[in-house]
Picture 1 (cartoon, rainbow over the protein chains, first blue to last red):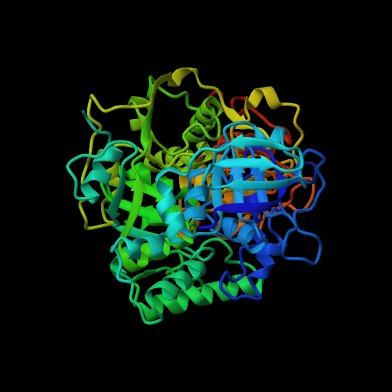
Picture 2: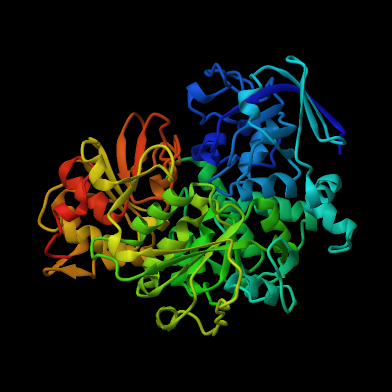
Length: 187
Length: 435
């Protein structure tokens, strides 16, 4: 597991549900075919209404037209991030677009679990409303040893909740590697 | 310390005498369900992790129900059905309900019940967030992603964190114009769409126990819209009457102990509830139907795992009988069985199908259809700025297709009454005497 994640923030509001993360009409593409799966990056967060996309200004596309990678690799979200469907295409599309970490006030259960068990990115919990502190485009450093987030643009540091007992799965890489390490399935 | 139904089922499947909220336990899985949207990804991960020639842990325990993107020309969607079909053949799965054959069923959560895969006391995981519906049978059921499903395919096990439990008791008698959907929208309005996150929603009380299995399924179906991990209703005679002829397995009935611990325990008076809607764009944006009477609608949609069961259509038909709809009205039976029942159930000597056709509604084929938008050619999908009243489960932006559309969630009674006026309408305006 990386000890530090650095990059640019993309800020969203609360209740960002899985239909906003990846609208259902796009759930038809293969997740394993390297070329076809780029469609997931292309449409990542495309269901977020314009005014809510890239706060506080809004109307900032997460992925530019014709691209499948985003210039933003850290998502800052409000409460109940990832609510809705169990579709693993949601965390997968964010990873394909280049997301390495999400920092939200809270998560919907299945999305959080999928992010960790599938090893897509690290879902972290903020202790305060970072959506009101951080602006889309700010340069961010997340330190996973001290559980702090530094906004390099605004020169401010915030503490984050620790990952708790799911850190073992994150460090292993995903639930399969964790199960192999623990002897639950043969390696 | 006593335990809840959910804790007892999880302890039993983890080989333990007791568990407590917060415990992480590995449980043995009785049924894994997947469908056309998440099946292909699950199969890919299963093969990558366990080998190209790997066999599923127990073919009798895998149920595959294509239901999401069925009646579409989308080539990728159709390719995905070929993937699950080939997997079912390769693994010799007895419970694959193929599209285009007489085995096709329709929406997975309702088909699971109809085909006898929901049994009290069992543990069922599904690659769909509304898998919580099966909790109506006194079992543990919850939604998971492809990775977890692939893990189960290979091992028959999965880790779960034992949830805290919330108890919702309804005493008294629901008025005849109230449906399970109203109760749910009322409660989600109470606790918010993350009010049950990581928790069990346990439904109890005489008013709940008088419900049919279909209405109990509606109650459990939308636990996920409150963030819930699972929902549960104790199994009773109603449960076993439904199961007769559907399964030979007995199941195990669990009761919550009197001293079981709940993090939330509230008693509601059934008699006081009025028809409820959830306004755009969140299932917890609660209002009374009568408070929204000035909202002009373009469409009424009655269907899905939440609102596309036979009891939902009987309710809608009671209101539409002999009337004409004023807006586009879509009827989508959840399953083939429900579709057939539309031609068998009668009111005043007319079949429900006849009532809907006479009223000017359009009847679609059994599937998830426009509940989740889907491919562009999906029946009932929104494409613009439509204002829709719908018996489905979610109204976040874009859920039914178009980001610009606005969706009001409501009961089948309310959706049908609104179809007749073109405005959000309290169903009491149409059924004071009859219902």
